Image (tube, rainbow, N blue to C red; front, side, top):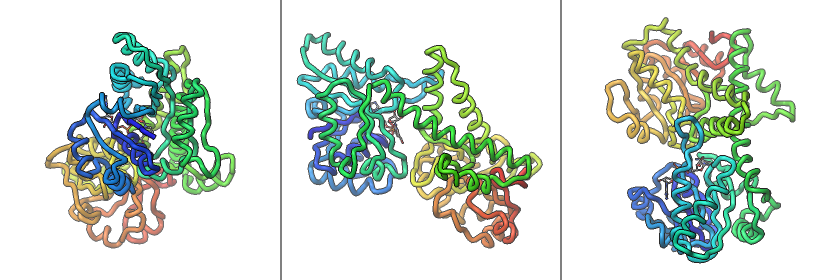
Length: 443
Ligand code: NAD
Protein backbone atom coordinates (compact mmCIF):
# COMPACT_ATOMS: atom_id res chain seq x y z
CA UNK A 1 0.00 0.00 0.00
CA UNK A 2 1.05 3.61 -0.38
CA UNK A 3 1.67 5.23 2.98
CA UNK A 4 2.70 8.73 3.97
CA UNK A 5 4.03 9.51 7.42
CA UNK A 6 4.33 13.01 8.84
CA UNK A 7 7.07 13.17 11.48
CA UNK A 8 10.25 11.07 11.44
CA UNK A 9 10.83 10.88 15.18
CA UNK A 10 10.81 7.71 17.27
CA UNK A 11 7.26 6.85 16.27
CA UNK A 12 7.15 8.02 12.65
CA UNK A 13 10.50 6.63 11.56
CA UNK A 14 10.02 3.25 13.22
CA UNK A 15 6.47 2.93 11.88
CA UNK A 16 7.58 3.95 8.39
CA UNK A 17 10.50 1.51 8.41
CA UNK A 18 8.38 -1.42 9.66
CA UNK A 19 5.60 -0.73 7.14
CA UNK A 20 8.17 -0.57 4.33
CA UNK A 21 9.71 -3.83 5.55
CA UNK A 22 6.31 -5.48 4.93
CA UNK A 23 6.38 -4.33 1.30
CA UNK A 24 4.49 -1.05 1.50
CA UNK A 25 5.71 2.09 -0.25
CA UNK A 26 6.34 4.62 2.46
CA UNK A 27 7.16 8.30 2.11
CA UNK A 28 8.22 10.02 5.32
CA UNK A 29 7.90 13.80 5.68
CA UNK A 30 9.57 16.05 8.20
CA UNK A 31 10.02 19.81 8.49
CA UNK A 32 13.50 19.23 9.92
CA UNK A 33 15.64 19.58 6.77
CA UNK A 34 18.84 18.34 8.42
CA UNK A 35 17.08 15.21 9.67
CA UNK A 36 15.72 14.39 6.21
CA UNK A 37 19.13 14.93 4.63
CA UNK A 38 20.74 12.56 7.13
CA UNK A 39 18.05 9.94 6.54
CA UNK A 40 18.57 10.18 2.78
CA UNK A 41 22.26 9.48 3.36
CA UNK A 42 21.31 6.39 5.38
CA UNK A 43 22.17 7.99 8.75
CA UNK A 44 19.73 7.35 11.58
CA UNK A 45 19.22 10.43 13.77
CA UNK A 46 18.19 8.40 16.84
CA UNK A 47 19.57 5.30 18.54
CA UNK A 48 17.05 2.49 18.34
CA UNK A 49 18.19 -1.16 18.21
CA UNK A 50 17.64 -2.77 14.79
CA UNK A 51 16.35 0.40 13.14
CA UNK A 52 19.36 1.32 11.02
CA UNK A 53 19.41 -1.98 9.09
CA UNK A 54 15.69 -1.81 8.25
CA UNK A 55 15.83 1.83 7.18
CA UNK A 56 18.87 1.25 4.95
CA UNK A 57 17.49 -1.94 3.42
CA UNK A 58 14.13 -0.42 2.55
CA UNK A 59 15.57 2.91 1.42
CA UNK A 60 17.92 1.03 -0.92
CA UNK A 61 15.01 -1.17 -2.05
CA UNK A 62 12.99 1.89 -3.04
CA UNK A 63 10.19 1.24 -0.53
CA UNK A 64 11.14 3.97 1.95
CA UNK A 65 11.88 7.55 1.04
CA UNK A 66 12.16 10.89 2.78
CA UNK A 67 11.04 14.40 1.89
CA UNK A 68 10.45 17.83 3.38
CA UNK A 69 7.71 18.58 0.84
CA UNK A 70 4.15 18.14 2.07
CA UNK A 71 2.41 18.34 -1.35
CA UNK A 72 4.01 15.30 -3.05
CA UNK A 73 3.78 13.40 0.22
CA UNK A 74 0.03 13.98 0.44
CA UNK A 75 -0.33 13.01 -3.22
CA UNK A 76 1.51 9.74 -2.44
CA UNK A 77 -0.41 8.11 0.41
CA UNK A 78 -3.79 6.43 0.53
CA UNK A 79 -3.09 6.30 4.24
CA UNK A 80 -1.59 9.47 5.72
CA UNK A 81 -0.18 9.08 9.21
CA UNK A 82 0.34 11.93 11.64
CA UNK A 83 3.24 11.06 13.97
CA UNK A 84 4.46 14.49 15.01
CA UNK A 85 5.22 15.63 18.55
CA UNK A 86 2.55 16.69 21.05
CA UNK A 87 4.67 18.44 23.70
CA UNK A 88 3.18 19.86 26.88
CA UNK A 89 1.71 23.33 26.69
CA UNK A 90 2.44 25.82 29.47
CA UNK A 91 -0.36 24.42 31.63
CA UNK A 92 0.56 20.76 31.01
CA UNK A 93 -2.12 20.08 28.40
CA UNK A 94 -1.01 18.63 25.05
CA UNK A 95 0.03 21.23 22.50
CA UNK A 96 -1.67 20.28 19.25
CA UNK A 97 -0.06 22.88 17.02
CA UNK A 98 2.06 20.37 15.08
CA UNK A 99 -0.82 17.91 14.65
CA UNK A 100 -3.20 20.62 13.46
CA UNK A 101 -0.57 22.12 11.15
CA UNK A 102 -0.26 18.73 9.42
CA UNK A 103 -4.06 18.42 9.25
CA UNK A 104 -4.34 21.85 7.61
CA UNK A 105 -1.61 20.95 5.17
CA UNK A 106 -3.45 17.73 4.25
CA UNK A 107 -6.58 19.79 3.61
CA UNK A 108 -4.63 22.18 1.38
CA UNK A 109 -3.29 19.41 -0.88
CA UNK A 110 -5.61 16.39 -0.75
CA UNK A 111 -7.16 15.62 -4.14
CA UNK A 112 -8.69 12.13 -3.66
CA UNK A 113 -10.00 9.95 -0.83
CA UNK A 114 -7.45 9.15 1.88
CA UNK A 115 -7.49 8.03 5.47
CA UNK A 116 -5.79 10.38 7.92
CA UNK A 117 -4.40 8.19 10.70
CA UNK A 118 -3.43 9.90 13.91
CA UNK A 119 -0.60 8.11 15.71
CA UNK A 120 0.48 10.98 17.92
CA UNK A 121 -0.72 10.85 21.52
CA UNK A 122 -3.55 13.37 21.57
CA UNK A 123 -6.31 14.42 23.95
CA UNK A 124 -9.80 13.03 23.60
CA UNK A 125 -11.65 14.89 20.88
CA UNK A 126 -8.61 15.50 18.67
CA UNK A 127 -9.89 13.25 15.86
CA UNK A 128 -12.81 15.69 15.55
CA UNK A 129 -10.45 18.67 15.53
CA UNK A 130 -8.26 17.07 12.86
CA UNK A 131 -11.38 16.36 10.84
CA UNK A 132 -12.45 20.00 11.15
CA UNK A 133 -8.99 21.31 10.23
CA UNK A 134 -8.79 19.18 7.06
CA UNK A 135 -12.39 19.99 6.10
CA UNK A 136 -11.88 23.75 6.62
CA UNK A 137 -8.95 23.82 4.17
CA UNK A 138 -10.81 21.68 1.65
CA UNK A 139 -13.82 24.02 1.88
CA UNK A 140 -11.58 27.09 1.54
CA UNK A 141 -10.45 25.90 -1.88
CA UNK A 142 -13.87 24.51 -2.79
CA UNK A 143 -12.58 20.96 -3.10
CA UNK A 144 -15.07 18.13 -2.82
CA UNK A 145 -12.80 15.36 -1.59
CA UNK A 146 -13.77 12.58 0.81
CA UNK A 147 -11.55 11.55 3.70
CA UNK A 148 -11.75 9.79 7.06
CA UNK A 149 -9.86 10.41 10.28
CA UNK A 150 -8.83 7.46 12.40
CA UNK A 151 -7.24 7.38 15.82
CA UNK A 152 -4.50 4.74 15.94
CA UNK A 153 -2.42 5.41 19.07
CA UNK A 154 1.09 4.03 19.24
CA UNK A 155 2.29 1.83 22.10
CA UNK A 156 5.91 1.18 21.12
CA UNK A 157 8.61 1.46 23.76
CA UNK A 158 11.78 3.38 22.99
CA UNK A 159 14.68 0.94 23.15
CA UNK A 160 12.48 -1.89 21.83
CA UNK A 161 10.54 0.11 19.25
CA UNK A 162 11.24 -2.03 16.19
CA UNK A 163 10.32 -5.20 17.99
CA UNK A 164 7.16 -3.63 19.43
CA UNK A 165 6.17 -2.35 16.01
CA UNK A 166 6.77 -5.73 14.35
CA UNK A 167 5.00 -7.67 17.12
CA UNK A 168 2.46 -5.33 18.69
CA UNK A 169 0.53 -6.46 21.78
CA UNK A 170 -2.52 -4.75 20.32
CA UNK A 171 -3.45 -2.47 17.45
CA UNK A 172 -6.02 0.04 18.64
CA UNK A 173 -8.11 1.58 15.90
CA UNK A 174 -10.65 4.24 16.72
CA UNK A 175 -12.87 4.85 13.72
CA UNK A 176 -16.42 5.37 12.65
CA UNK A 177 -15.90 4.57 8.96
CA UNK A 178 -16.03 0.95 7.71
CA UNK A 179 -13.99 1.93 4.70
CA UNK A 180 -11.17 3.30 6.86
CA UNK A 181 -11.20 0.26 9.17
CA UNK A 182 -10.96 -2.04 6.14
CA UNK A 183 -7.90 -0.16 4.84
CA UNK A 184 -6.20 -0.36 8.23
CA UNK A 185 -7.01 -4.06 8.52
CA UNK A 186 -5.30 -4.57 5.17
CA UNK A 187 -2.26 -2.50 6.20
CA UNK A 188 -1.84 -4.26 9.53
CA UNK A 189 -2.62 -7.80 8.31
CA UNK A 190 1.09 -8.83 8.21
CA UNK A 191 1.47 -7.74 11.85
CA UNK A 192 -1.72 -9.51 12.84
CA UNK A 193 -1.28 -13.09 11.65
CA UNK A 194 -0.77 -15.04 14.86
CA UNK A 195 -4.07 -13.92 16.37
CA UNK A 196 -6.29 -10.88 15.94
CA UNK A 197 -4.70 -8.05 17.86
CA UNK A 198 -6.82 -5.33 16.36
CA UNK A 199 -9.20 -3.69 18.80
CA UNK A 200 -11.65 -1.48 16.95
CA UNK A 201 -13.51 1.17 18.90
CA UNK A 202 -14.73 4.74 18.60
CA UNK A 203 -12.19 7.55 18.23
CA UNK A 204 -12.60 8.97 21.73
CA UNK A 205 -12.12 5.63 23.42
CA UNK A 206 -8.99 5.01 21.32
CA UNK A 207 -7.57 8.41 22.30
CA UNK A 208 -8.27 7.75 25.97
CA UNK A 209 -6.83 4.21 25.76
CA UNK A 210 -3.37 5.60 25.05
CA UNK A 211 -3.44 7.97 28.03
CA UNK A 212 -4.93 5.31 30.28
CA UNK A 213 -2.11 2.89 29.37
CA UNK A 214 0.65 5.39 30.11
CA UNK A 215 -1.05 6.68 33.25
CA UNK A 216 -1.40 3.11 34.55
CA UNK A 217 2.30 2.40 33.93
CA UNK A 218 3.36 5.66 35.56
CA UNK A 219 1.07 4.88 38.50
CA UNK A 220 2.74 1.51 39.01
CA UNK A 221 6.15 3.18 39.19
CA UNK A 222 5.06 5.94 41.54
CA UNK A 223 3.26 3.41 43.70
CA UNK A 224 6.43 1.36 44.09
CA UNK A 225 8.47 4.47 44.80
CA UNK A 226 5.99 5.38 47.50
CA UNK A 227 6.38 1.91 49.03
CA UNK A 228 10.19 2.25 48.73
CA UNK A 229 10.11 5.51 50.66
CA UNK A 230 8.02 3.88 53.38
CA UNK A 231 10.31 0.81 53.39
CA UNK A 232 13.31 3.02 53.98
CA UNK A 233 11.70 4.58 57.01
CA UNK A 234 10.49 1.39 58.62
CA UNK A 235 13.66 -0.63 58.00
CA UNK A 236 12.25 -2.91 55.26
CA UNK A 237 13.82 -3.81 51.91
CA UNK A 238 11.55 -2.84 49.02
CA UNK A 239 13.24 -5.41 46.77
CA UNK A 240 11.91 -8.21 48.98
CA UNK A 241 8.52 -6.50 49.15
CA UNK A 242 8.51 -6.24 45.34
CA UNK A 243 9.03 -9.97 44.97
CA UNK A 244 6.51 -10.67 47.68
CA UNK A 245 3.73 -8.75 45.95
CA UNK A 246 4.71 -9.60 42.38
CA UNK A 247 3.99 -13.26 43.04
CA UNK A 248 0.27 -12.40 43.16
CA UNK A 249 -0.87 -12.80 39.54
CA UNK A 250 -3.30 -9.92 40.01
CA UNK A 251 -0.27 -7.70 40.63
CA UNK A 252 2.47 -9.41 38.60
CA UNK A 253 6.20 -8.74 38.47
CA UNK A 254 6.18 -6.36 35.51
CA UNK A 255 6.83 -2.68 35.92
CA UNK A 256 6.96 -2.56 39.72
CA UNK A 257 10.61 -1.58 40.03
CA UNK A 258 11.33 1.30 42.39
CA UNK A 259 14.04 3.73 41.32
CA UNK A 260 15.13 7.28 40.68
CA UNK A 261 11.82 8.24 39.03
CA UNK A 262 10.42 7.92 35.54
CA UNK A 263 11.37 10.22 32.67
CA UNK A 264 11.11 10.20 28.91
CA UNK A 265 8.98 12.08 26.49
CA UNK A 266 5.76 10.23 27.30
CA UNK A 267 4.91 9.39 30.93
CA UNK A 268 5.47 12.86 32.43
CA UNK A 269 3.65 14.69 29.66
CA UNK A 270 0.85 12.15 29.22
CA UNK A 271 -0.03 11.94 32.92
CA UNK A 272 -0.15 15.73 33.05
CA UNK A 273 -2.16 16.01 29.84
CA UNK A 274 -4.73 13.48 31.07
CA UNK A 275 -5.04 15.40 34.31
CA UNK A 276 -5.63 18.60 32.30
CA UNK A 277 -8.24 16.86 30.14
CA UNK A 278 -10.07 15.71 33.28
CA UNK A 279 -9.83 19.21 34.71
CA UNK A 280 -11.18 20.76 31.51
CA UNK A 281 -14.19 18.49 31.90
CA UNK A 282 -14.77 19.56 35.50
CA UNK A 283 -13.15 16.54 37.15
CA UNK A 284 -10.32 16.64 39.66
CA UNK A 285 -8.23 13.51 38.84
CA UNK A 286 -6.45 13.31 42.19
CA UNK A 287 -4.61 10.07 41.60
CA UNK A 288 -2.90 11.47 38.49
CA UNK A 289 -1.73 14.56 40.37
CA UNK A 290 -0.27 12.32 43.07
CA UNK A 291 1.51 10.10 40.53
CA UNK A 292 3.20 13.20 39.10
CA UNK A 293 4.05 14.67 42.51
CA UNK A 294 5.56 11.40 43.77
CA UNK A 295 7.68 11.18 40.63
CA UNK A 296 8.94 14.74 40.88
CA UNK A 297 10.03 14.09 44.46
CA UNK A 298 11.60 10.77 43.50
CA UNK A 299 13.81 12.42 40.90
CA UNK A 300 15.46 14.32 43.79
CA UNK A 301 16.12 11.11 45.68
CA UNK A 302 19.67 10.40 44.49
CA UNK A 303 20.70 14.00 45.04
CA UNK A 304 19.34 13.89 48.59
CA UNK A 305 21.23 10.67 49.35
CA UNK A 306 24.49 12.04 47.93
CA UNK A 307 24.05 15.37 49.68
CA UNK A 308 23.37 13.65 52.99
CA UNK A 309 26.44 11.46 52.53
CA UNK A 310 28.55 14.62 52.32
CA UNK A 311 26.63 16.44 55.09
CA UNK A 312 25.41 18.92 52.49
CA UNK A 313 28.96 19.95 51.56
CA UNK A 314 29.09 19.14 47.87
CA UNK A 315 31.17 22.06 46.62
CA UNK A 316 34.39 20.77 45.07
CA UNK A 317 33.19 17.15 45.04
CA UNK A 318 33.05 15.04 41.87
CA UNK A 319 30.30 12.53 41.24
CA UNK A 320 30.69 9.76 38.67
CA UNK A 321 27.38 9.16 36.95
CA UNK A 322 26.52 5.99 35.04
CA UNK A 323 23.53 6.42 32.74
CA UNK A 324 22.24 9.62 31.14
CA UNK A 325 19.40 8.27 28.98
CA UNK A 326 16.00 8.12 30.66
CA UNK A 327 16.07 4.34 30.26
CA UNK A 328 18.38 1.71 28.72
CA UNK A 329 18.71 1.11 24.96
CA UNK A 330 17.96 4.67 23.95
CA UNK A 331 19.85 7.95 23.62
CA UNK A 332 16.76 9.92 24.62
CA UNK A 333 17.35 12.24 27.59
CA UNK A 334 13.97 13.98 27.61
CA UNK A 335 12.91 14.42 31.28
CA UNK A 336 15.65 11.96 32.29
CA UNK A 337 16.30 11.68 36.06
CA UNK A 338 20.03 12.12 35.25
CA UNK A 339 19.31 15.71 34.24
CA UNK A 340 17.65 16.67 37.50
CA UNK A 341 20.52 15.02 39.39
CA UNK A 342 23.29 16.69 37.38
CA UNK A 343 21.65 20.08 37.55
CA UNK A 344 21.21 19.80 41.33
CA UNK A 345 24.83 18.71 41.73
CA UNK A 346 26.09 21.64 39.66
CA UNK A 347 23.91 24.02 41.64
CA UNK A 348 25.56 22.70 44.81
CA UNK A 349 29.02 23.25 43.34
CA UNK A 350 29.86 19.63 42.49
CA UNK A 351 31.28 18.30 39.24
CA UNK A 352 30.04 15.35 37.20
CA UNK A 353 31.97 12.72 35.25
CA UNK A 354 29.35 10.90 33.22
CA UNK A 355 29.18 7.83 31.01
CA UNK A 356 26.29 6.47 28.96
CA UNK A 357 26.62 3.80 26.25
CA UNK A 358 24.53 5.88 23.79
CA UNK A 359 23.46 9.25 25.18
CA UNK A 360 26.85 11.02 25.45
CA UNK A 361 26.30 12.93 22.23
CA UNK A 362 22.83 13.99 23.33
CA UNK A 363 24.22 15.24 26.67
CA UNK A 364 26.83 17.22 24.74
CA UNK A 365 24.08 18.73 22.58
CA UNK A 366 21.96 19.61 25.62
CA UNK A 367 24.64 21.02 27.91
CA UNK A 368 27.47 22.02 25.57
CA UNK A 369 30.92 22.54 26.99
CA UNK A 370 31.10 23.26 30.69
CA UNK A 371 33.82 22.88 33.32
CA UNK A 372 31.64 20.86 35.67
CA UNK A 373 30.75 18.12 33.16
CA UNK A 374 33.14 15.56 31.70
CA UNK A 375 31.57 13.10 29.27
CA UNK A 376 33.57 9.87 29.33
CA UNK A 377 34.08 7.18 26.69
CA UNK A 378 34.15 4.29 29.15
CA UNK A 379 32.31 3.52 32.39
CA UNK A 380 35.51 3.25 34.40
CA UNK A 381 36.85 6.55 32.98
CA UNK A 382 33.97 8.27 34.75
CA UNK A 383 34.87 6.62 38.04
CA UNK A 384 38.58 7.53 37.97
CA UNK A 385 38.97 10.95 39.53
CA UNK A 386 35.50 10.94 41.14
CA UNK A 387 34.62 10.86 44.83
CA UNK A 388 31.51 8.66 44.60
CA UNK A 389 29.51 6.78 41.95
CA UNK A 390 25.78 7.13 41.19
CA UNK A 391 24.02 4.70 38.83
CA UNK A 392 21.00 6.33 37.24
CA UNK A 393 20.06 4.15 34.23
CA UNK A 394 19.88 0.35 34.33
CA UNK A 395 21.91 -0.42 31.19
CA UNK A 396 22.93 -4.10 31.06
CA UNK A 397 26.58 -3.01 30.89
CA UNK A 398 26.29 -1.70 34.48
CA UNK A 399 24.83 -4.85 35.98
CA UNK A 400 27.94 -6.63 37.23
CA UNK A 401 30.78 -4.17 37.52
CA UNK A 402 34.14 -4.78 39.17
CA UNK A 403 33.32 -3.35 42.60
CA UNK A 404 36.90 -3.77 43.81
CA UNK A 405 38.19 -1.66 40.90
CA UNK A 406 35.52 0.95 41.60
CA UNK A 407 36.53 1.11 45.26
CA UNK A 408 40.16 1.68 44.33
CA UNK A 409 39.28 4.36 41.76
CA UNK A 410 36.94 6.43 43.96
CA UNK A 411 38.32 8.94 46.46
CA UNK A 412 35.49 8.22 48.88
CA UNK A 413 34.11 4.78 48.04
CA UNK A 414 30.34 5.01 48.05
CA UNK A 415 27.87 3.73 45.50
CA UNK A 416 24.42 5.27 44.99
CA UNK A 417 22.29 2.67 43.24
CA UNK A 418 19.38 4.56 41.71
CA UNK A 419 17.93 1.39 40.16
CA UNK A 420 18.56 -1.19 42.89
CA UNK A 421 20.78 -3.16 40.53
CA UNK A 422 23.14 -4.53 43.15
CA UNK A 423 23.12 -6.72 46.21
CA UNK A 424 24.04 -4.33 49.04
CA UNK A 425 26.01 -7.08 50.83
CA UNK A 426 28.20 -7.71 47.76
CA UNK A 427 28.90 -3.99 47.31
CA UNK A 428 29.72 -3.52 50.99
CA UNK A 429 31.96 -6.58 51.02
CA UNK A 430 33.98 -4.91 48.27
CA UNK A 431 34.55 -1.97 50.63
CA UNK A 432 32.01 0.50 49.25
CA UNK A 433 29.24 2.21 51.18
CA UNK A 434 25.93 1.26 49.54
CA UNK A 435 22.87 3.47 49.11
CA UNK A 436 19.83 2.10 47.30
CA UNK A 437 16.19 3.09 46.90
CA UNK A 438 14.00 1.87 49.74
CA UNK A 439 16.46 -0.63 51.12
CA UNK A 440 16.03 -0.20 54.83
CA UNK A 441 19.33 1.30 55.76
CA UNK A 442 19.64 4.10 53.22
CA UNK A 443 18.14 6.82 55.38
P1 NAD B 1 9.72 13.21 18.07
O1 NAD B 1 9.85 14.52 18.73
O2 NAD B 1 10.84 12.22 18.16
O3 NAD B 1 9.44 13.42 16.51
C1 NAD B 1 8.46 14.27 16.01
C2 NAD B 1 8.88 14.70 14.62
O4 NAD B 1 7.82 15.42 13.99
C3 NAD B 1 10.09 15.63 14.59
O5 NAD B 1 11.10 15.08 13.75
C4 NAD B 1 9.54 16.93 14.02
O6 NAD B 1 10.48 17.65 13.25
C5 NAD B 1 8.40 16.42 13.17
N1 NAD B 1 7.39 17.43 12.80
C6 NAD B 1 6.86 18.42 13.53
N2 NAD B 1 5.96 19.12 12.79
C7 NAD B 1 5.93 18.56 11.58
C8 NAD B 1 5.21 18.81 10.38
N3 NAD B 1 4.33 19.82 10.29
N4 NAD B 1 5.42 18.03 9.31
C9 NAD B 1 6.29 17.00 9.38
N5 NAD B 1 7.01 16.69 10.48
C10 NAD B 1 6.83 17.47 11.56
O7 NAD B 1 8.37 12.58 18.60
P2 NAD B 1 8.05 11.04 18.92
O8 NAD B 1 8.74 10.62 20.15
O9 NAD B 1 8.18 10.24 17.69
O10 NAD B 1 6.49 11.19 19.29
C11 NAD B 1 5.51 11.50 18.32
C12 NAD B 1 4.14 11.30 18.95
O11 NAD B 1 3.97 9.92 19.30
C13 NAD B 1 3.91 12.08 20.24
O12 NAD B 1 2.57 12.44 20.32
C14 NAD B 1 4.23 11.06 21.32
O13 NAD B 1 3.56 11.33 22.52
C15 NAD B 1 3.71 9.79 20.69
N6 NAD B 1 4.36 8.56 21.17
C16 NAD B 1 5.71 8.54 21.40
C17 NAD B 1 6.29 7.35 21.82
C18 NAD B 1 7.77 7.29 22.13
O14 NAD B 1 8.19 6.32 22.75
N7 NAD B 1 8.56 8.27 21.72
C19 NAD B 1 5.52 6.20 21.99
C20 NAD B 1 4.16 6.25 21.70
C21 NAD B 1 3.59 7.45 21.28
